[in-house]
Structure formats: structure tokens, C-alpha cells
View 1 (cartoon, helix red, strand yellow):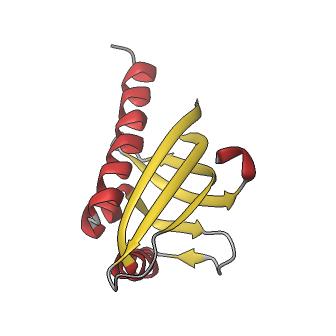
View 2 (view 1 turned 135 degrees about the vertical axis):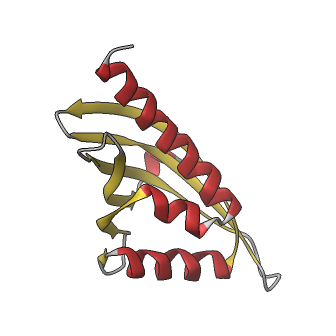
Length: 134
């Protein structure tokens, strides 16, 4: 297996694991996928920077209810020690308080960084609401 093949396999695994951890509300496992200098830019909200801010973001999100996300990876490209992933997502939120189920759909763009030990981490995570994701 070439380095390129290994990297592609690792990046697909990060994508797939991220969905599993998100759908199970596993904050610790999600954080393990993120870089120590990570930035999340969720639509309509302030930029979230650093491990503790990312932890707090996910904890608050999962405290709202049970989330179910689906993702369609449209592009995965590697350029040296950087990679991009982008695609479509849909999210359903079933509130813990019994309120009405909510949903959202959009596009995401993820920038990943390869570390000297060969490990990849999510460096930047952006999302936006778009009609074509519905």
C-alpha cells in the first residue's frame, strides 16, 4: 500500500468515525479527531477555536437532544500534509425536553492536517445551510 493509499484510507476513516461519534454524542472521541489548534466555523455563530472551546461546543450541542447526521462525501483531496473534504449533510435533532424534532441540511468543508507521526486531524471545520442539500 502506498503512502497516498494509506492517507486516503485514514481520511475516509476520520470521516466515517466522525459521523458515528456525532450520532452517539461521543464528545471525547470527536475531540480526538480534532487538532489542538482546531477552528470550527458553524453558520450563524462565532468562530470556535481550541480544544476547550470545541469541547464546550459539542457538549452544548448534545445537551439539546439526540442528533442524527448523514453525510455524503463529495470530494477528498490530499496536497502534501493538508487534505480537504467537502460534501453534503443532513441533521435531525430530537430534543431531550420532548419538543418538536428539528432539522437542518447544508454543505461542509473540512481542512485536515497531517502530523509528523503520520496522524491526520481536523484543523478547520466549516458548514453552511444550502437548499441543494435537502
